[in-house]
Amino acid sequence: MVCYKVTLFENNLYQNKFKMMKTIEISSLEFQWQYSDSWRLKVTDFKIQAGENVFLYGPSGSGKTTLLDLITGIHTQENGSIKILEKEINRLSAKERDQFRADHIGFIFQQFNLLPYLNLIDNVLLPCYFSKSRQQKSMIDGSLKKAAQELLSSLSIEESLFGSLASQISVGQQQRVAIARALIGKPEIIIADEPTSSLDKDSRDVFIKLLLKQVEKSNSTVVFVSHDTELAKYFDKSISIAELQ
Image (cartoon, rainbow, N blue to C red; front, side, top):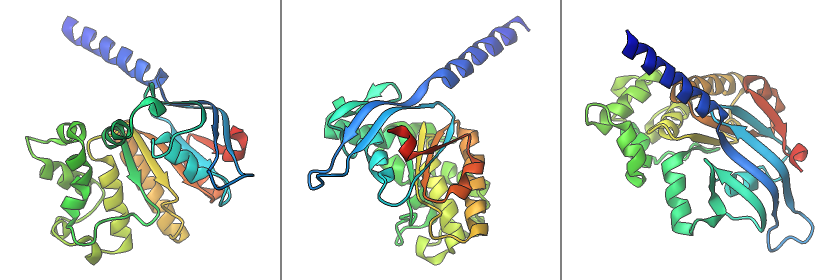
């Protein structure tokens, strides 16, 4: 009984520390494309706590995708600081940023970007081929395939479809495979860039509820970007990109 109480206490300390940690911390950020003389992205102060679900909105051309590219290290800023998981992302080399992104960030793209010539299992496992960390965290009884199967099953994909090519399944099923691929290996951060823009309202709402349900299980932090302000109700925090300047 004593051992159990100590274990529970330590677990609570870990959970509290996790919740206090800032997954993303941006200050005094400035970025401008070389070919643009007028437009400049500025972020004065932006912090996201571990485990938060954040909805970032703004019209087309407001800098939403550019900000995501800076957060994930695809581009680096001129001025200011971006800390991801308490690491200065712009101080890493291009190769180090690529590996950091593979290890710690799951992506859900606007068109899902599944590889049409791979089956569902192989599509889900793609991030594991680029990250030993996510590969190790994914293993179930020493099997990556079993991990992918369990994720797909939890998203209501029938086992009979696991061997199907991504091009052979419905859009709704592709949505769920995209969620599974982003979550495999429990990355700390999930980036979703306009993934519901081409969906009708019912499909959109189902997608978001499924995503957030699965994210809660993995304790990941979500940054969900869209121009559709109706989606704000599903998230812990809603921020206009204009408010960040």
